[in-house]
Image (cartoon, rainbow, N blue to C red; front, side, top):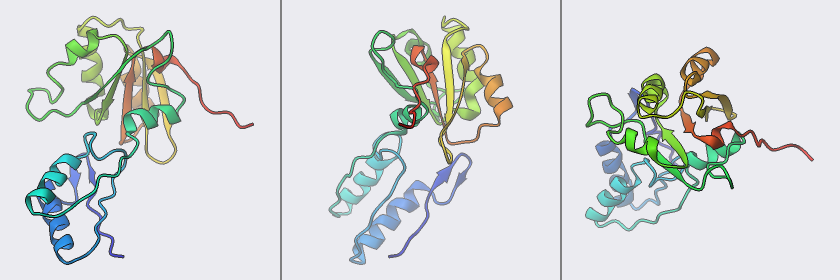
Length: 195
């Protein structure tokens, strides 16, 4: 098997998306079985849709194998459910990296802050202070539970409130990738216990 790393980290892309698409097509046309292995689910901010479109346009058959999105798995691994009876009946997943807005955050963040349930933000660690500020500005109380879970190596959660989560996260030295959770469930700690 030939392994070609094409991973992406903030500010460090081993290959542009167009190059990844071309590589997938090229290897498939060589008659190889190609696996595009991604963390989480490829159709949740994973560019899986773009890759599928490129393959389809090139006439190459492909198959989708669902993954577990980090928006649910990473908080869950840290003992934070995204829904919980009496606390949150819904959750909303949003990217914290919008290329077409002045501050790089979703333009509808204030509307999301007003929705009931849990707000899960992906790819937002570098914007955490700005995210908290916008959510506070939208009317969420400073004491709203918030957590940042680093998915690097073993899940590690920093818990706090919307008013102090940026400072706590900075002091803890959390690194990317990380998932941000805001809402009542972020105050839960249901970590698994050994029997």
